[in-house]
Length: 193
Image 1 (cartoon, rainbow, N blue to C red):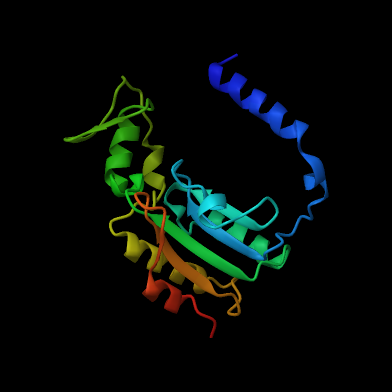
Image 2: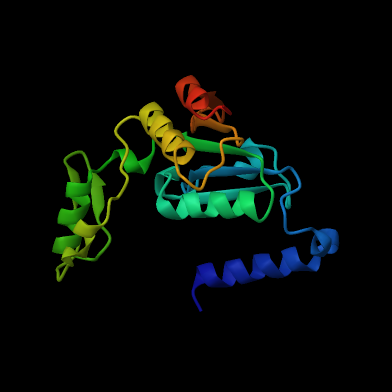
């Protein structure tokens, strides 16, 4: 058993031992909102948004992007579980700003091993074979955080399965201060008509 697996299972044992009333939490989020944010380990939506278990849905992916799957989750969150407001929250110093689709495709076609980043860019660390399959994926990389938040809010707002009565707010989380900074253009684009 790996050290990480041992640590996770021990932490779960301690958590389950004090689970208490959490078994009675309802499925719908109590505060009726959802957050779409990045998977970056430095972000803790429960802390930066003041959440307790059962409060909100948190949907996470690389970059916090409005992918088809993220929108699927938001629609389910609204349609079946009653969320009434959504937040799109990207963050400063995001890894999605460090590469392009072309770089990712080149790395994957060369090797499937973990790549490294240095002052000269991304490099493969192992021999091939790689796979050309990466070229079929839009990696939703980020050039400008505010612009990507705006694009994602617009993509969600204009999706045919998203009702016009859900406000969508756009923010950037600052990993150096812990503060949420509004992207006013995104919040305007996500306002209720």
